[in-house]
Length: 258
Length: 325
Image 1: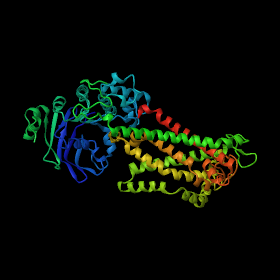
Image 2: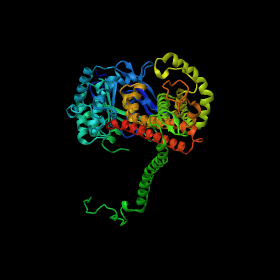
Image 3: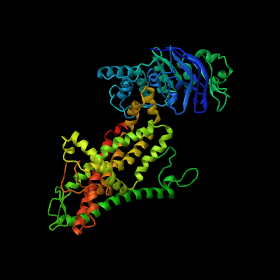
Image 4: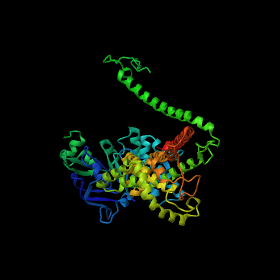
């Protein structure tokens, strides 16, 4: 179920603003790749180009190539909606549908894919909630609103919602930045568990987190305000944190930034 | 409540650092809370005053009434003995308003969805403006237009409906120009802008996070609307519709101009005839005697009550799934 992502020569724009410049990298399947870098360096923008969510912003556009195994996500007759069904996403702030129950939140994506049979839905909802380490906490109140859960539970609900449709890739945009340390730990455990099944890409501002959860780390940077973000280097996480090739990376991870 | 340092945060307490009175005791706060409370009380008092006025003016006429006020269809308060009842008016008002709502709400919400999610960016401003402009047209103009233009053209539509759906009593009978149906269409156009613009406001409130959540699951535009926008905007759309309904029920002059008065309740909505509370008041007030005026005020009181009930029902609908919003 996990696929390799190969990006080559990718540029992204917001109207006239050149947000990220000429990014090429490979994201390995069944592993966790972390994106780190200062605010505004284009990590999230780049992440959103991987499931074509970048272009939902008015005037935003993308140039370049993103291959998911052997399929070009930006190919001429590729429907962005179809791309998003195979590349799932978890956002910075937990965003369960406020009008839906816990059950319906998890089932939302399945219903889009035409799964209607109650038995099958029940089964996948349970499996997804278990997959997201949330089942035991919510199994007795599946019909309660998803928005009534705590922040950490809501984020795990969002992960359950994303994995319910069995995506090839799971993108996570700072999934723990709105959570307390205990919830963060729960999500990190979950990431470690999910990586045997999915290709996971996670954007994080927390370098310890990148070091803890990821197999490979990519460091992004900007030359200055208004300049496009660039990929500085990508390598094994252990290498990036101990012996990076680039000085900029070393400065960033040791806190001697700028 | 006592804080750790033992300073009590009550009115009149002094701020530890500045020595000035705590915020709850400042003049500005007192004036503001007094003004806010006063406004609230004023609105309630105004409502009560209107109700008292209507009841006080209505009672003498009701005492002289020889017929049952609630169930009689005829309206002859100036006859001797006076006989009048609101059955026909209530029927006309409720049916024409709900029919108008039935026509207007889907169209208005469709317009709002189109403007918010489908129209090209450049067009949205203009479209919104044009729809809002419909609200600025005076109702007398709608009345004239309904009477001299729309009713002429509604005859054909009514006949088609009559042929196709004549077996349903509402669409039966012999279709005319100045029917409750025509009045409903005029009302629908009049309440369209309010429903549409409130729905649009509601759609603007939908959190971007929810929209993106749906999109990231691979929802098409329509699926995104169904998943994230409509459920979120549900209570707002109901509220908008109820405001529209309220306006339709109270609308006077346009309805009075379009409808031809024919006595008696007629469930054939395509036939000429019908009257509403407001149109009846507009048509009869000038020639009414003292009992007549009292009778009209009594009918106004009933309209007031119906509007209140409709609003309360709408609130109940909105509150029913409050847990989820």
